[in-house]
Image (cartoon, rainbow, N blue to C red; front, side, top):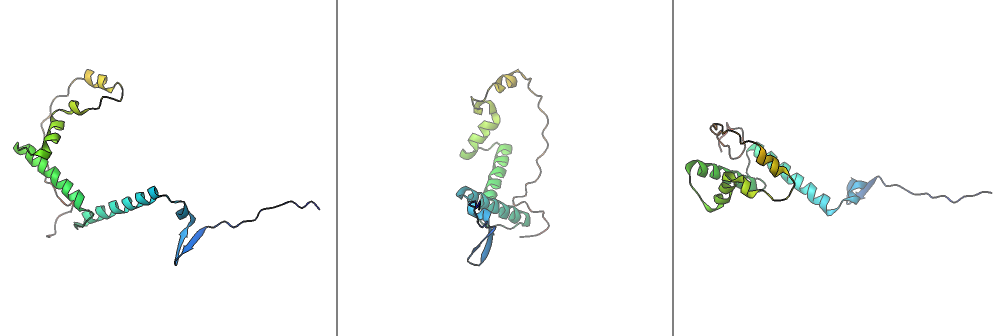
Length: 138
């Protein structure tokens, strides 16, 4: 009769759970994938909020960072020093002291290269703290 065993199975293409339908890729997600998607969404929310000029919890860390950068720029221009600015000022004044010792022979190439001549700096443009386009009063 020459009957051979065979295998029969169903391949799922979608998953139904509590009224929602998902693709089967959802079953293969890890915790890292979920965290990455959450961070991407939070970044998108912060970017949208900044573009609209709307302050919320997702924009606060970025707003504080922008304010700190503005404070450092003002302190640098005025010659004022505060504790948080000291390390940044040292890195700007002497970047060679903060280079890592590992990584190969790039240091020899940098040491052999002539120093570039200092150029005149242009005035920094006004900083918009919230990234808005202006034109509206808050």
